[in-house]
Amino acid sequence: MQVTDLCFNLYKSFGHFNTVFWCDGADRGTINLLKSKFGESLNWESNDSFGRNANIKVRPVPFNRDARNMLNHLYLMVTKGYLAIEGDNPKFSKLLTSMRTCYANEWDLDKRRTLFSDLLDGLRLSLKGYQIN
Amino acid sequence: MIEGPPRGPYGRFYELYEQFKDNQNPEFQTFLITIYDARDNGLVTQEFINEKKIELGQLFPQIFEGSFEKGAGNIFEARHINQVIENGNKYSISNIPVSQYTLKSVGCDFGYSTSGTGIIVCEHIKTNEGKHLIGL
Image 1 (cartoon, chains in turn blue, red):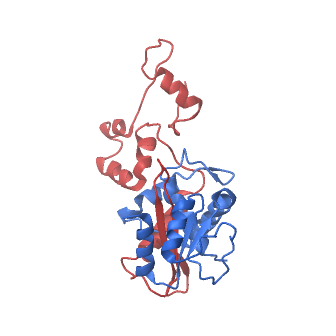
Image 2 (cartoon, rainbow over the protein chains, first blue to last red; image 1 turned 30 degrees about the horizontal axis):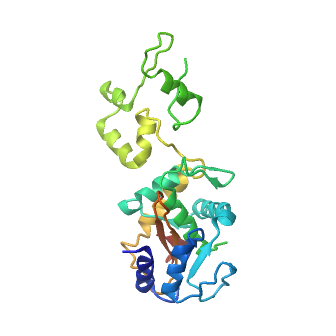
């Protein structure tokens, strides 16, 4: 199964109106495929403002600009006790290992020292959907 | 004498260990003392070791086996991760079905040639006590 099919199936199973996808903007090809799947405009690179209630489901994020802020946001979510991950579920063991080994210099993630950093990237992308004061 | 636990395959300590670990140089001698030496001398039990293996996962070799693994990070403290796990076990999706009406946010890090793809799905949960949580 292609990753775009996987995402679209998630969208269908979780509810159409309240599921959004935050994607690493570096892979333009996959984002274009995903946007085509969702029937969204492919002219997305000039628009990085989605608005609070915008109907854009696929939201590319420029990692080179936002990576540090996202790691800081993840840190705040964790330290303020807003995040919940099942420790007994083996599905999450790699993600928890990634969090335990998460190493950064001035909020710049050191991928050489962080295990399973792709999962940590997915987590910090997904948390862009939530702002809790 | 230079003594210490391994802290990842970096730094002078690692370089010296790699250089002299074969004990061929008469001026240097390396000793590797692991949790199994402690077990064999009656200081800890095998049950303790098994518990620590589950608790620490991939960090176990670094902390208890003297192995220069990629090590512990500098961002999250153990108590914070324990809090995340405690929240997760209390409000797990196994106990609470996924609602069609909550905000779901999916993070997709698409893999390139050698890197993997990471997809994380989060759901906003409001507990009976009124607490807001982000569950995975």
